[in-house]
Length: 228
Picture 1 (cartoon, one colour):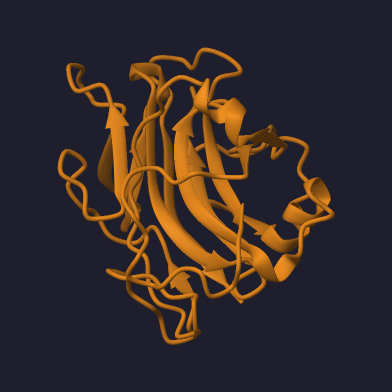
Picture 2 (cartoon, rainbow, N blue to C red; picture 1 turned 90 degrees about the vertical axis):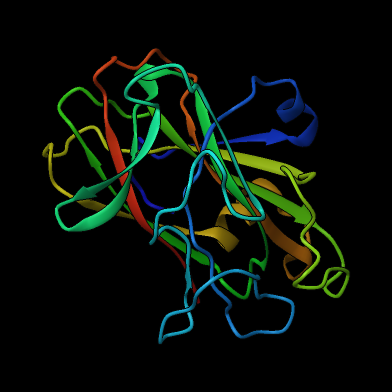
């Protein structure tokens, strides 16, 4: 996990998650890793076998299977939207326009794809924690799911981690990259769990809840990647 103090992880039990407000949208195209029990339907894989999460746009009002998007629809601009930013297809998140959550069910053994990375960019009104990355984990037997049996809606989770996106000393309008070691992250908070049974079952992006974001705050996100 990055050493930046801004990227703090806030673990929550599944029970605590159910008591939180409904969160909003996500944008991502997932790909197969080519490993047993680690592939995802409806996804694309690059030449290195990495799992691509945030590379192509889709309809936020009618998301693909396994996706869930929740955002206010009566405001303009909407809290979530696709934009061409510096030649990249990026998700533009505007938490000041309303709460949101966007996420996708996954079925990835943490040890098989232990690294998560993504690119982000702030405008001058954005602050650390305006937007958070949500990771949902579940412990279960290695062969209990098939790659075509992910279910629908947000899955049950043993643990949820929310990580504030951003850093306090950055140049606005420039792209930055963050890296997380998911296996180390999970062991840090749940050291007694058997790592070969831990699966990442949800990846989401939500509006932060630690403060009220400025109305003109914009955070661009792209190139979310799970890798070995």
